[in-house]
Length: 390
Image (tube, one colour):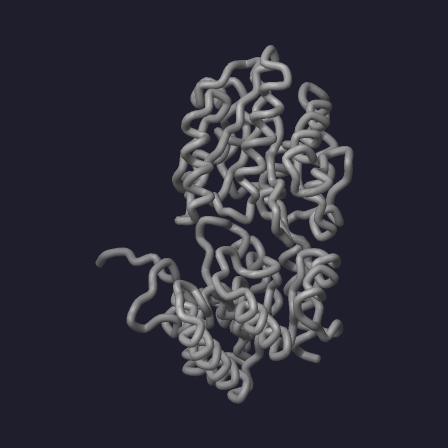
């Protein structure tokens, strides 16, 4: 029989098949009906969801992916096997994804509300993790905010990765503060291969030992301020050509013209090495171990898994002036671009030179160890169980 990876691809009986399998596994260990968490959208390229849920089974949860997000209401088919059905929404982009008509988008929102009401009317509950201010590549910002406000109203629990996220999002939507569950983003210890040393990584990527290397890893999207980053980096290189600097870029570009321009400019620059495609997980270590500084100077952000990834590999970071980010950072391990201008980012990159060649790895390691994924998963499970029971 051909092996099939359940939960990686939607099938005709999804997500019920995945839910039944998860409940069966949970019943073996729990001896009682578990609380079923069906989560969506499913992100496989980023291990975040696997890290978040890795220890929740010990607290009476079964976890099942909803590969096709709009199928979340189908979980009602297994409600007799679970003590509670929870639909855990991560990113809200699936509601209006690829829709180009405003009227069609309005209709889609109504369909979404109908399905959410169906879940709640059958005794289910909604949990929402706040990842972004609004979905990336939003076409109808006002409607995206309408979706988020609706979820905030209907959710029993709103999971935030930083306390400041609530304040940032309060500019867009209103919250019942009693619903807030704060559990930070975990580090990525043990999730990526890490056996290549600095010399091997630089040799593989064609970098010299004396290069000052800055890495930008992850999907290439306009909200990340790519044009500003490239302009700031090129200006820094031109300031003193005797200092060899390289910008190392890896990630899949979206179809935004601004991103396309960034990719083309990178390909033409002698100061940039770019791989404009999804970077396989086993290649991540080459980017990380070759670099001196990790970059996340995004123009619009609420949280950043990239920062935790850089820190997992003991890299100092340059990032934006965002309260939700700096809640878990300090100037000993990071540098701030005070605004979104080229000049501010260039200044931050230049100040970050103080990290290169200095022994900051122990500070970053001590900082990152606070965000152990197993500890945070257990905390998430305990707090979520308590709030759902209440």
